[in-house]
Image (tube, one colour):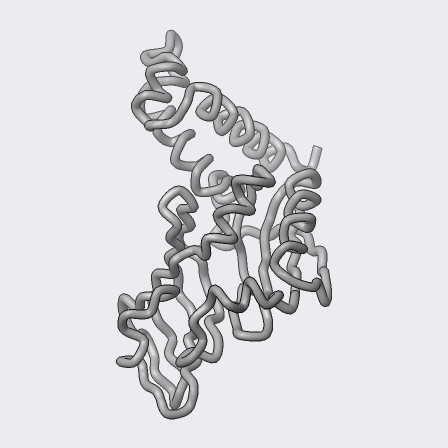
Length: 214
């Protein structure tokens, strides 16, 4: 597992899909939840507002919803925010089958995108191919993965974590099993193949992190 941070200049099509008439930038401080199935990302971030506007002017914007203000300083607001994941991100996740943990720094601005993700070698390779469709890459930085407030499940994507926890709660890992893979998939609401794939990837990541030094 490695972390990669990519800075790119968004192409005209990517820039056209964003509403930055009132916002200068959105910088993620901590990503709490990413749900690409629903197209929503929840987190704590800094919203920088353009001169002449206030936080009230952000109401009704498509890209962001401010749920609570933690700190206000001039035109910068530290907020609990819900961001609508842009359609192009959702498309790339599905097209390139990206299985990633979204991390910081992540900055969305009119003329700049900084995206940080954690994943295995193959996932990061597909990610770098995918982001080329959003704009011109200016820099790529690789770092060892470091999970904040570490626990064994923090190495999983949100979807993997949801599936493996439901499997545990439902008795999939009991002996004998109290639920089959097929019935677990029905309970979660996805296909059996997708359920088993999420479980296998989650199990592999957990084992790799537990035995990372061996």
